[in-house]
Length: 231
Length: 90
Image (cartoon, rainbow over all chains, first blue to last red; front, side, top):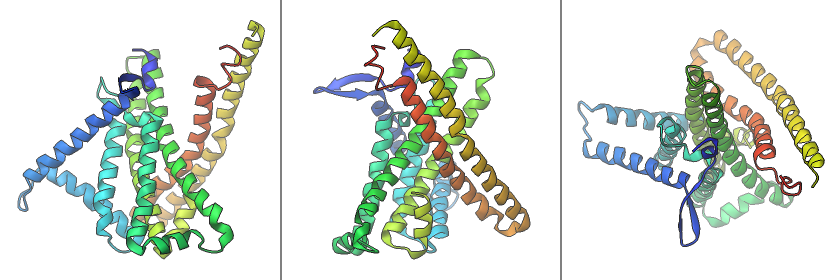
């Protein structure tokens, strides 16, 4: 398993459909998140909480702070969704640190799937809040001529989120792999640390961009300028 | 395909990829430097909003970085998954 394992490889086939190793690593991430969540839920305490509960509370409060900071008010329906998203993406990006495993987000399929989930969430929150008719009317918002541009912005936002995450993760993994090939002793260390920073940062950026686009789709007025710059 | 044409294809691809990566990351780097300069100036000028600036600074830097990432992706595609390699028999 040389440098070819940097790109995803097929582990087995289910009825002719190839299952890649990034799918198995996604299962590992899912089981880790479910295990931590179930354990923390079973040991919930109001007084004298333990470290796992404090860590999870820190993430939830951070997400809520971001929502309030960007939207101006708290939106409880977004908190659980965005917390799950940031935990999943950050844990997936950092899975490459465990020796046998690789980051599942280095596979373009995983990041496109995450971006499609994000895309679906904007439409879902917009429709849940305003209804289907108002959502369809928002697509022709300034004039009717803007319809293809609005549809194109949906595609370009999704594509840019997927490619940004994929490019960062595979670049950091490739740098690590090349460094380990050249000088395996001490030189990879700062580059792997840089990979950790970009992994956490890209998870944060993915989540905040999802938040900004959801708020734009809901129709928070002061968010549209920020969303247009991030397209 | 004769080996000479394959060699030409390999040489041209390598030169183009090298030049693309060098030229394509100049402008994102300069713009990120400008953003960081302004952010530090304003963080020093108003320490009370320094935390809010720092919070948004990383997000903006990651968004700007994505332009350089697009260039990197095209270069990776040209190197590792070149769609014209099969025409040349490589």
